[in-house]
Image (tube, rainbow, N blue to C red; front, side):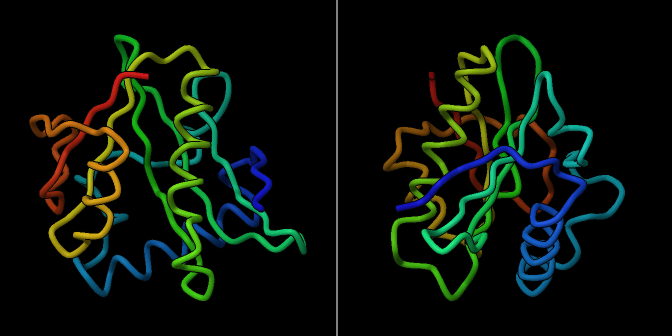
Length: 152
């Protein structure tokens, strides 16, 4: 149903998806792309240790995206997951999460970590259902209320 492709995080459609995600999160938490927040720059998602995937629907429209960045010690962080609002409730978020986990595994990571905030209980539920176990605050994200880890 979806086709995932790596796209440079500093080029469309990745930049468009990230900008939409940042704008949506601003309505929940305030700006998340400010100093002091965990890093999620295009350089973080660049090869050879990172990637940014975009999911395209059968018509070729970009409908979701997210990145994998290195953390060290065999761990990667999944960041900037976003699904275009008009395409939600079709399983794209789960498919994106699986694709990002596969990408992390292909990059040689053995552990994936992620976080989400209190205003996104649906995301936390999805992460828990996907096997993410609660862990401590690994990235000093002041807006997060759930930090999870999964062995790949």
